[in-house]
Image 1 (cartoon, rainbow, N blue to C red):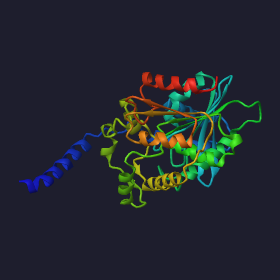
Image 2 (cartoon, helix red, strand yellow; image 1 turned 60 degrees about the vertical axis):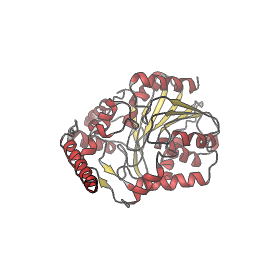
Image 3 (cartoon, rainbow, N blue to C red; image 1 turned 90 degrees about the vertical axis):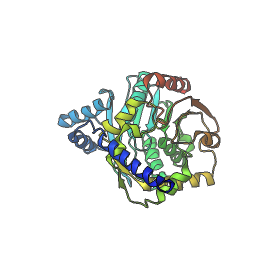
Image 4 (spheres, rainbow, N blue to C red; image 1 turned 45 degrees about the horizontal axis):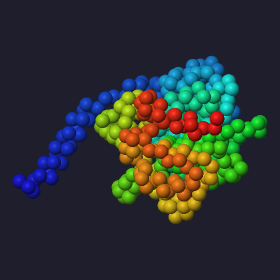
Length: 349
């Protein structure tokens, strides 16, 4: 009987996956919503503007869908070798400074509307960017040739947005791959134009179980792989990725800008980036920095990252939030209160 146990176990697992696949909920948005949103970059130029006519209605629908304010907002595209990159800017009546928010992998700027609204309430102008291959930006979904491309996108927009008026504080906030993007951007931003402060949420430096993940990833070569419907079930997103059931359901079933694609090329690019980073590990930023890390995060390796970040950002304050997952800016509102209190304390008064 013992010789048959693996076979029986395999058959049982296949049957279980089949049953779960049959019960997988369907996306709650219509295909027309997805199509309408993906056409939005066509309405914009390289100058900040608010669209008019039928374009206005579609843009307002997009803002409302992702719970952004519908006033004092403009959008633009930035073009380069990466194609078109989509960006939003929200400007309060009186601003005390400017904050850039850069999202993580397989996410987009629409995932940070709650953080945006809190910053706006505190009179911060907020600029958000969809990285290449994400959200409303061009590029193969969830793929990238090199992490340096992310950095060039951010540095380009950062330098263009610098005002010649009375200088105000400028802050960069990066979640996960957004933090990696900031580390790359700092290489091409002159030190005199560096931000006044940096905030990392669950930064992607060392990935959890990196060796295992990259080894398995090599088996897929460079071909994008459509994911079966079974992976759309929110039960398959671990609590280490998100401890907020409401966000898990939205991300997998309610987000029309999500793509059911696995892109080995992204992990190849990450593997190359982290090896280069560790080979030449030197400070990237000497200003004030705040690192926010969840203890339950199973996407990045917080314990290994802490000493690395002490080198990369020598003046960082490293805070661990007990029981918080990787999507630390998308936890339930009462838990986000704790995170935002530390952000408020850090931001220049």
